[in-house]
Picture 1 (cartoon, rainbow, N blue to C red):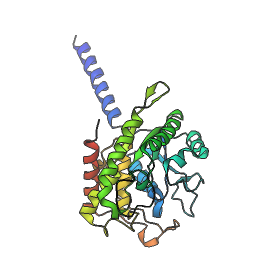
Picture 2 (picture 1 turned 90 degrees about the vertical axis):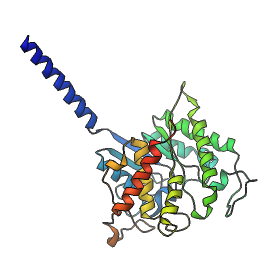
Picture 3 (picture 1 turned 180 degrees about the vertical axis):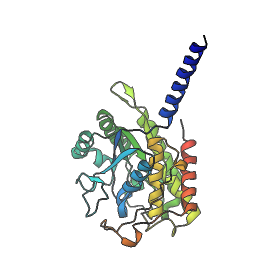
Picture 4 (picture 1 turned 30 degrees about the vertical axis):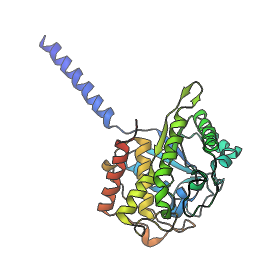
Length: 295
């Protein structure tokens, strides 16, 4: 009887240890992530390298892929040499080459963004620096739905990234966020091959709006439309968190990526790191958004 009790204890201990190992074990799969966008993802070294940095630090193998043309120094990022994509969703969705890029790349995730804010906000809603006429919501959601269908049928998951936009239009960020939330909700209702599919909404626009209050324009933006290295680090952190579901506060990655506009190395900035206080603020804020996201 004692021998049987001992055997049971050994079995139970083995199961417990196995469960612990599985809980903390590393994911050995390689994931491919297509960033479908222009300078929002590409500017001065882009989001690719810090996104991969967060993943590598967590023991995850995520490969960032860009549709852009190969720069002189690609930081190991895969480029598809398609070039710039159109500036509005209907034109993107109408391009068969973009659908071919999505279908042929074996992507686990494809990151989309809704392009210029002027295309999203109705014409009768006035705001400064409007550069384009509005495109009706129905046309935008139809375009996103077409891209979403291609992504799902290719075996991937759609990620909708809230483009932070230019800092001079801070007053329209919350209305824009409402439009993104509607697009997200409507995409999730679409049935593809007999079922609905989850869509990840990444609220980078709201994170950057918080950062403007915390750091000011000079501390966050490199120019009117693009964030500095710390801002890009924050977006990469948010994408890492929302795509993997991992807590960024447990991730020690803190390297900043800063290159020239033509992706040339800046020697004195190769080893740039985020300050501990900045790193903590970003990771805390990202986790606050993720842990309170709609379910």
